[in-house]
Image 1 (cartoon, rainbow, N blue to C red):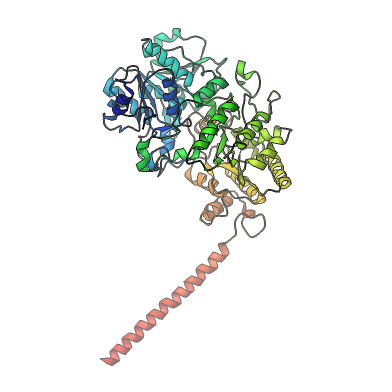
Image 2: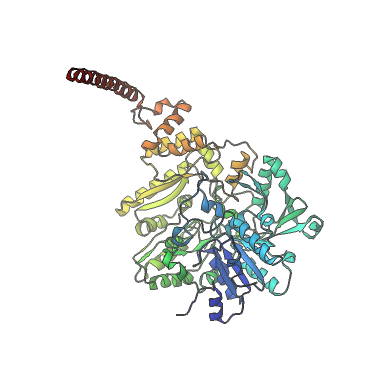
Amino acid sequence: MENKFLPISMKDLKERGWDGVDFVLVSGDAYVDHPSFGPAIIGRVLERYGYKVGIVAQPDWKNEKDFKRFGKPRLGFLVSAGNMDSMVNHYTVNRKKRKTDAYSPGGQMGMRPDRATIVYCNKIREIYGEIPIVIGGVEASLRRFAHYDYWEDRIRNSILIDTAADLIIYGMGEKPVVEVAECLAMGMEAKYIRHVQGTCYRIRKDQLDEVYDYVEVESLSEIKKSKEAYARAFNKQNQEQNPFIGKALIQRHGDSYIVQNPPAKPLETIELDDVYELPYQRTYHPIYEKSGGIPALKEVEFSLSSSRGCYGGCSFCAITFHQGRIVQGRSHESLEKEADKLIESPNFKGYIHDVGGPTANFRKPACKKQMTYGACKNKQCLFPEPCSNLEVDHEDYIQLLRKIRKKPKIKKVFIRSGIRYDYVVADKNKKFLKELCEHHVSGLLKVAPEHIDPKVLKLMGKPNVEVFEKFTKDYKDMNKKLGKDQYLVPYLISSHPGSTLKSAIKLACYLKSIGYIPEQVQDFYPTPGTLSAAMYYTELNPVTLEKIYVPKTKEEKHMQRALLQFNRRENYKLVRQALISENRYDLIGNGPKCLIRDFSNEETNKTKSRGAKGNSKSKYKKNNRHNAAKNNKRRR
C-alpha cells in the first residue's frame, strides 16, 4: 500500500525516490496529517510548492539521532512545539504536572521537553552549527517579544534570543513560510530575510537604520525594571497587529533588536480553501496505532473548520496575537467537499461534530473596511457594545449548515466550537437562533459569559450580564416554541484580574439565583500574548494604566474557584472562609439565599457529644481492667 503521509524516515524517502529533503520539520506533537494540526498544514503547503519536507515528530532531545534522521536538509529546519505552548501542555494553572498529553501517542506524558522550541533549536545548533532555523507555532508566535513567564514568574527574553533561530514566523504562517522558502531556495542567507510580513528577526544595534517606519516598544531592561513599562510595551504591540496599516515593531535586547514585521495579510477565501483541500490523510501516522493513537484527533476527526480569526476581542484570548482579528471564511463548496470526505470514512457514524472556528458564527470580516484598513487600533467590534459599522448577518452560516446537514448519511450537524451570544442578540432576525435550537444543539449549548460582575467583564472585554440574560431568555423561549428540552452550559473563569472575593461571591449568588452550578470552572491561566496576562503581571490595565486588583495567592484563588461550586462538600471550608472574610454571614445559614448551611453549632454539639461518649467509654474500659485484675487475684 502506498504511503501517502509526509516522510518520517529514510525508508520513506527512498520510496519517494528522494536523496534528501529541503526542510526538516521538527514538531513537539505526534505526526497527525490533519488540517487541525499546524505542522501538518505547513508541511503540506510546502509540498504543494514543490519542496521536499521530512517530519521529525517528538524527537528524543537527549541525543542527536532523531535530529540526524534525514541528514542535513538542503534549506534548513522548521521548528514548532506543536499545537500548544509546551508549558501549558505540561502544567496546570497550579503549576502541577499534567498526567496526560492529548497530542502524544496514547495520551502519554513526557514525549516532549519543557520549552520545546528552545530545546529543539539548541540541539540543532549543537549538531549543525550555522544552518537556517525558522521557528513557528503557538509557542514561538506568542513569545516573540520579551514576555512574562507565569511558570518561572519572571520576564524572559524573546524566544528568538533563547533559540538562536534566524526567524520567527508568527500567526498562521502559510504565506510567510512559502516566501521564506523561496528566499532560501534562491540562495539568500537567512539573516538577510527581513522583508516578509508575519516574521520577526534580529539585528545589531548598528543596523537599526535599515528598519523603516517602526514603533519602538520598551526594551527588555526597561520592562524588567518597571511593570508600567511592561504594560506600555504590551499595549503598543497589541495596537500594531494590523496586516494592512500596522507598523513594524522593534524591542531592544541588550546590543541587539528584535524586529517584528506587520502581520501577514489574511488569506482570501480561495487561498483558505486551497490550504484545507491539500492531500491530508486526515488521521495519525500508522506508527502510533499500537500505542492507542493520538487522543487529540478524536475532537476534530469529524469536524469542519469553516473560518479562522476572531474579532471578539476577549482579553484572556491569544487569537488577536496569533490568528488576528480579521475573520476569514472558507467557501461552501470547499466545506461540502470536505464533508463528503468525512462521510466516506469507515469510522463515520453520521454526526458532524462541529462546523466552526475560533467563533463558530463569525464567517466574514466585521465590516467592509477591515480588508483595506484592518481592525481598528483603539476600538473593539463587539465591546462594550456592537460597533455601528458591524455587519450582523447569519444568513451565510445558515445556508452553509443547511447544505451540510441535507447531505445523505449525515444525521446531525452540531456546533461545538462556541458561538458569540452577543452577536446572536445583536441580530434582529431570529432565524439563526431558530435553526440553532432546531438542528444544531445536542441538548446542551455551551456559551461563555465568563463572569457577571461589570468591573470584571469590562477587563475581560465581555458584554454586561444583561446581554447574557437576554440571550438566555431568547434561547429558552425558542426551545419552548419548538417543543425542545435543551439547556445552556455557561463557561466561567475564576480569579481573572479585577476579580475580588466580593466579585466571586457576587457570581456565586447569581449562580444560586438561576439554579446553576458549573461542572467545571476555569481558573484564570496567564499565558503569553494575552492582554489578561499583562494585567496579571503588572496589576495595571495596559490600555489605561489604571491600577487593577489581581488575586495571586493560592489561598484566594482556591476560595474564588470554590465559590463557583459552593454546593460541593469538599469546598465547604473554603466557601465559609471566603464569606466570613467578607463579613457575608447573611449567606451562611438555612435561608433561601444562603450559599452554605451553618454547621458551626451542630459541629460543636457533635464534638461535645463525641467527647462525652469517649470519656464514658474510656472509664468503662478502665473499670473492666480493674475488675479483671481482681478476679485474677482471687483465682491465684
